[in-house]
Figure 1 (tube, rainbow, N blue to C red):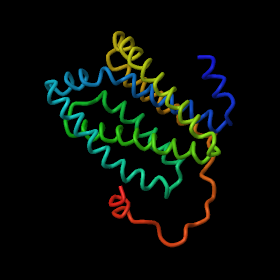
Figure 2: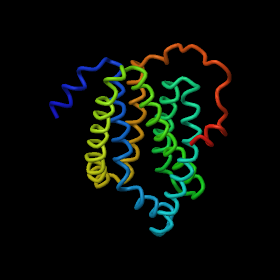
Figure 3: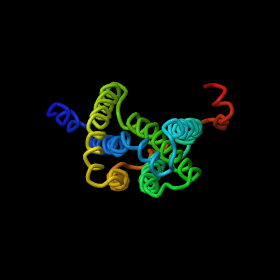
Figure 4: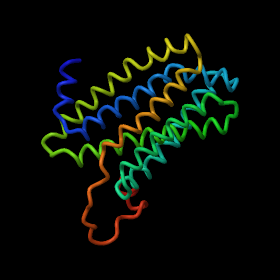
Length: 210
């Protein structure tokens, strides 16, 4: 869309790179989304109900882990955590093509889901740090639009690719996630911040607040 491209072009290089990375990461996940259930069913010889339970457990565990991930994102360098999350996603997609053990597959799914959640949290934090308050709402809206575009086009692309070679969508998804890391080079490290007075809240207190 011409309007979207024009809007993205008005932002700084850091924001543009982050927007592009957000889109590519979404596409990498969306490519595999319509194929994952059938793929796991065939590889692990599970029925649809068991595959649904497997995916549900993986997402539930990843959600719990993401709570701690959100806690540490504000205490460590965000760019490095995002690169780690993208690398974990890339490795996870490739490992899924070798899925033949239920427990290892579950662990891989947990890693990829947790990495996705960490990327979402961290990228929003970086956007906030690099934009004035008045521009943040528009940037988040644009990011949301790009996410929708990724989820609208990714599944169709994945189905077409799977028709040629069944495991190719997972390999391509891993490649997209991996090469997206190089776009992060243009995103600077977190700005130096003045240490907060006193010790930061413990994770337990954070959970109580939530």
